[in-house]
Length: 262
Image (cartoon, rainbow, N blue to C red; front, side, top):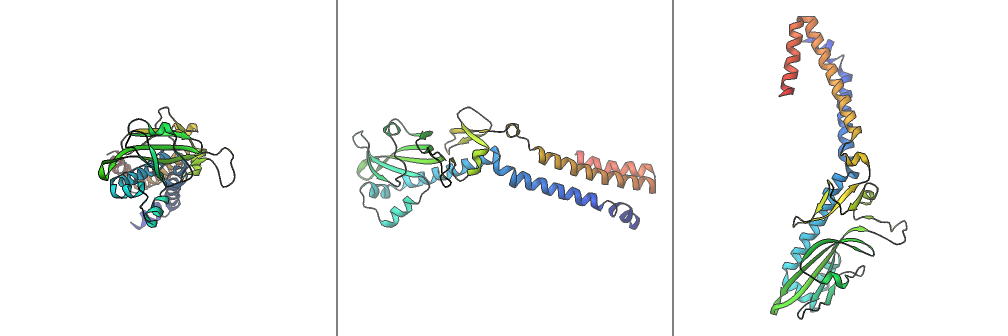
């Protein structure tokens, strides 16, 4: 056992450390550096952000008492502050006679045009002057059978006619995404869906390596690390062959390779 430690473990410790370091570096690159700008990572996180806001809006619509106070302008200061702090825009219209009349809004940054007030309930991507939004339109009945039209605009990507250092176009919460992906209406491998399961839009990777979904740097590091481990296995098998005969060396290799194959 002492000879094995001196002839194999001690002589191959740098190969082992090198393999471990390469695996660690590959993991960091794949999960923190490469992934933060990859289409797969961005699709998952942009979709999650949108769905969180959709669920919050659904929760707001269930509070019909609050909706009634909002359209009648009987809300409290705390209720108003809570609504103005939401990351999405809310618009409430009275809709008793089929003609929507705006009664409450929580933002001054955007205003839906009349085309968004027509038709049935929707979840869909729309383009406005200052960016791209998911538009959510719902019909709600509050006290005394009063009908409301509730509309939410969830900003997905900002756009500006003139850009400044603090006003740049880009995906909400993911400014680095602008360098990696585009919004596309054509089908790709990266659909962004609403909580209803409907595809809102697709992300199109800007780089060939992204479209091929291959991180060649991580793959190369992992291959080198595996080669280093194979060198260690070869040296250990050579030790057994020299010390105990070639059959022991073969049996050692079989013991290593068979579990790996399984």
